[in-house]
Length: 308
Image 1 (cartoon, rainbow, N blue to C red):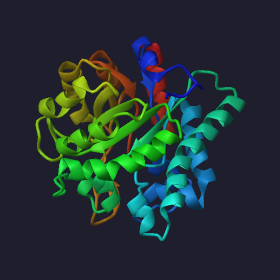
Image 2 (spheres, rainbow, N blue to C red):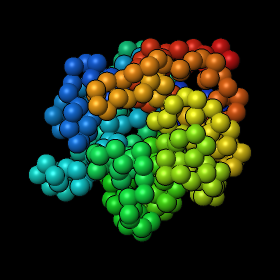
Image 3 (cartoon, rainbow, N blue to C red):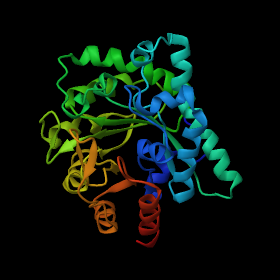
Image 4 (cartoon, rainbow, N blue to C red):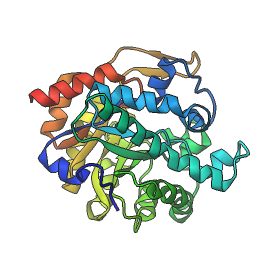
């Protein structure tokens, strides 16, 4: 059950690269919104939904073809911690897709005519914990337990009819296996994207082994990496393409590093057009950015892919 609002995303990937958006959190923070709590950007689904629409619209205007929803940290468990019941939580999770659709409609009203898609974000179990464990994995849960955690949220997202489910920032191959099981039968295609440290997942598994289960997953239309430094994405793109034979999705951070003690970003961006061209040459078909990558960089990506 894919959306009828644009050609199927899987078909578009065969024709050429598709531009993803950049970081939702940095765009919201640049507009003055405080995201300093456990729900992160998902808090605004309830409190400031119009801000989410504006963030998506900024990326569409910059040249993004895909909006990734503000549901990365939106879970039944997380909302329950705020006293939000299951029915209301399901509505909020689904609303993340509709807010992205609203941004599509506004982009159309402003003259954007190219195909636009909505990817419903499903972050890892560690994102719900909000303690940094999404960059470690190894939660002490079985694959079955992780599947039971992910399935209800994926059902709520699928019911809102996104074009694709973004199974993103996955730190652990065990969690990836749980997610691949959890998306079966939902009727919505998915991409699977790991966060990595060099040639391994954050949990330490070799990427060649981590990517392998996605090769035979019919629901998965793309495999790759996100929320890592651009340097680590370089080799990972080639590995994902070689192991799975599927289009690759890649959207790393800017290359700056987070100083947890000072609560600030250090260093400089290493995200360059030359990297984008290499990723495309190695099999990347969905290309964008994650943390600290804003509309200006997405516009540069769009220009680079149009020229190449």
